[in-house]
Image (cartoon, rainbow, N blue to C red; front, side):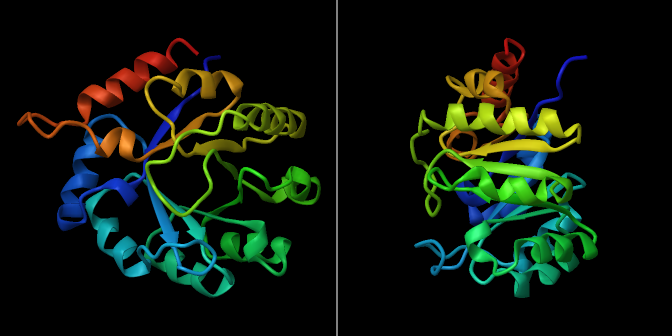
Length: 228
């Protein structure tokens, strides 16, 4: 059986003056998931968007909304995003006092739950919660800003997590975020990822054409994934 690959455009790189149309266009281009980066200028050195923006986008698309919380503390805002229409909520273990409890809270709110690992964060947290995660997100850049270059050492980490997922026998999505582009997406897939966050690689596509400007880059990513 061929693996299902999902492309998750990060709206961090979208044009916020017309965000609803951006989301509509990028999903129409053949992507699968709306990746929603939430930064608090505390856990990471940037400030982005909150539940009200998520709530405003929910009527615009039926696509999965994948909320990546780069906030600390994290528990307080989880119910707000669940109510706003999130389908998946992921967080960094360093941002939670009780990781098991935070994962349970996300599920109690009706969302799928996941853990996010920065490039230098140990995977040892997974030793205790593999039965409670629906997604594992590996950062291939240090979080806080879009447009960064992929850290090559992440490939080995992807392989390690893929081995853990396969050994668990559970249907856990393995997402990679940071510097994923047409020229490396196949390599990331071969390492074991099946969800690919792409921000500037997609939203930075040429605006010269009247056609959906995301079609070409998404088609190119799909072609590369077909080789993986």
